[in-house]
Image (tube, rainbow over all chains, first blue to last red; front, side):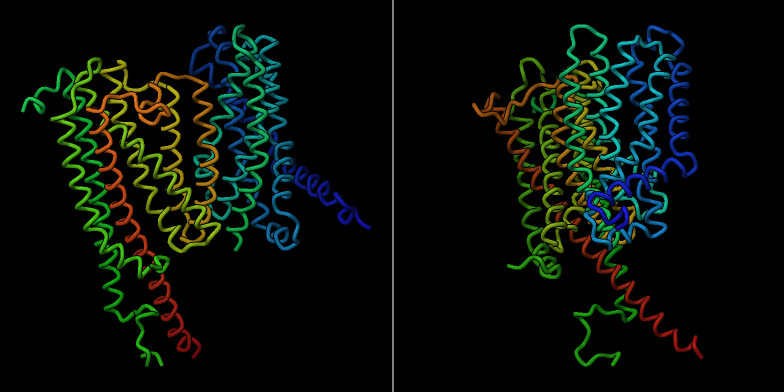
Length: 229
Length: 64
Length: 249
């Protein structure tokens, strides 16, 4: 009995395959973090090096940087699998495609977004955030970026058959990421400013991630099936 | 006539709204008409070249 | 009557269109007369209240059009109705145009009343997001070659958008707000005066008829476009088949 035959064995096998691929292929994780760093670096040149201003807009800058870095990596989610035919194999194998999409998203998140979350505290120091705000931004990014990946999976599945779908993918996904951005930024901002509550927007952010975990895989699987036949 | 002339200090904004709406609706209609004209012309050209829809092909069949 | 057959739909809609167009023209004549000669100026907003008779129907159509697209998307994916995809694709540019109109008339109304063309208020922002979603859908349709595949992809995106729109609406409500609350669709009856309400309802009816006329016209064009594509592909196929024996010699 191989690992792939045991119950739940294929899930772990698929996860580790995806994670290894996303870490290996051209240093995907590192490029995402570098892009994040580049976005955060150009902000002070745009708005000026005023530390008070940077501390005020810091959480928003980090969130927008993370959003852009996530969008940048999304087109790789299904593209390689379609090009080398392994997507068709998964479809033929009869595994529930929704679960496959969910596992691929989790692995993609672990390979691309988790490094962003880990880099956020370091970049937050450049933006003069206080320790409490650094913790809040990192926590909201850790909770919110899975939603971005899961929503983005829908766009990635719909544009998978297109040659140069990356730009269209970003245009399609951005409107859907607005609620995540709103609650993510308002929760991390609320942690610093006294009267605003932190817990309420944070819980909304958690709820959006859970909704995305249900809607995203189903819609993405439907999109993949339609692009295959 | 007082209704039309007496639009108050912001007549320009009101006029601009109605003008833009009219222009957009007219533009949509022009696009729809031009699209239809181009499509029917292309279809007529194909018909003239002897291409038929399956439902229009004579039962005896020219292609045997 | 079986309207699922495109040919029968073409003949039925061809007979229906002149009647709808006439009703639309009558409704606009009545609506514009009521707007300019009957409806009084608002005691606070003055004559700018006349912008409302364009702004509110356009915004209402922007939302109705998306609902029609969402229902059509269900028709494409669940019931595989042959006209559902045609209906959705035809509705998208019209919906985008009405969304654009509601944004433009809104900002031209906002300048004299609020003192600014644009505010990042909840209502305005969610309509702007709706506009971006319309444009994204149109882009997706235009990028994919095969109309059947494009229709299915767009249907998935439309339905996901239908789930997301209330969430966007609710999240931006929470985020910021200045726009006045709903005053026509309320459980305890409309709060606006009948002399304003009746012109508004007439204009809303006129705009709805206008939408129906345009939607039918666009659907007819879309059917013709698909017919043309099938014929062109078929013609190319016969030419290839005719050319092959000579090539083999």
